[in-house]
Image 1 (cartoon, one colour):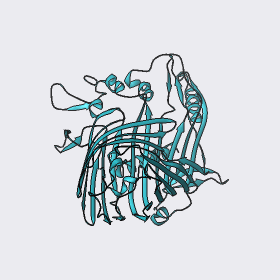
Image 2: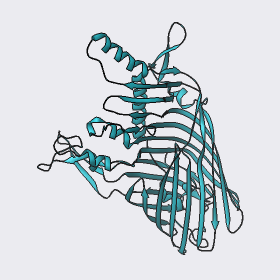
Image 3: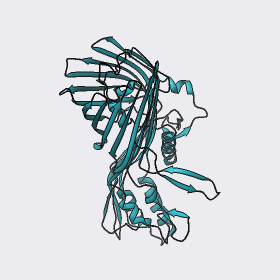
Image 4: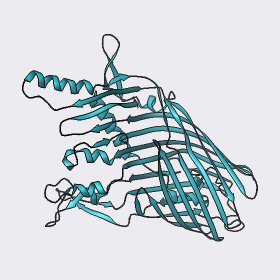
Length: 474
């Protein structure tokens, strides 16, 4: 059963690396990109109508890690070109790894692929959007205490407590149906609202309140609980003769149709935002994205364990005592399996933006993006310089995010009627690790903790006034 939990975690991590992405911050002030209303539903596209290319309006991919970098994990042999991990007995540096960690570290992705995307003006004051989107996101959080506790790092000190409750993993795949409405209230105010209907396909969510107390004579885990909730069609329950769940096993074959069109895991969410034109040159904006959650009711499995444990070592005097000691350990780690419904929330984001119009073709912007996860705030700050013309616009950005301060991004948008094509990155790959494996093969690994790309292709119509009577900022 513990093996099943590990299999679920492994599957989720693999899926997370196959499809991954994050909403690029650089897109926030890109008015000429139809999907610039994703981080703020109040944003109104200047053309009368657009339709996105399925799968490319937009496509995103990224990988973000707030913890150690490649150089923190791997060290170079001073006498050769070979490399080894921080655990190397001669020139490894475990302390360097620990110093590179925060109290809580995150490995995360946030993916979305558009199935349908349409936007149009109902009248000069109302802009309407409709979108169907496949979304997948995952977050692995881990505390520095987890690595401090590992005896191999030499940090297992007498009488020290290790708080593990930030060790958590959550991954989900769901389909989103969204209708957005933005309204020009007056010269100064524009507001937007986007209610969303959600249908969950896959989920795994873990929680714990584990604390480990070490000592020279005994180790103690005070009364604590571990919970793993999963909605996963790849597994099925195995029952005993009394009808109780004995174990969980993999299904012989996944029913792809049932997976893709499962409507039993439903949920609701909402996005809302506002833009305030303080003066002709100064604009302020704010939005809340993904406020809501999903109720998981199909293919459910819940693993729960609630116990404490006091470990004084193994008595090696008799075989019987040793066997009893091992049985005591096993009993304390036994999980109860149920199939109860449960709920999980989306990762809510708060955007706060400001920009200054230097002239009708050039502006500078400042964006604060905040994501909430398990009661913790994960902030980002992005500054951008933006230029625009009738057929092309571009943006250069600098971001501070997840203890990473080398994120120079760009966005470029082309409009050649009726096509609108853009590419955006928050971190341009400028430097690379040149890695040679033992078999002689080589590959390049980009520097940095943040790696993302966003591509989009749309058909746009009714853009005659762009570049003439309305100064638009990328």
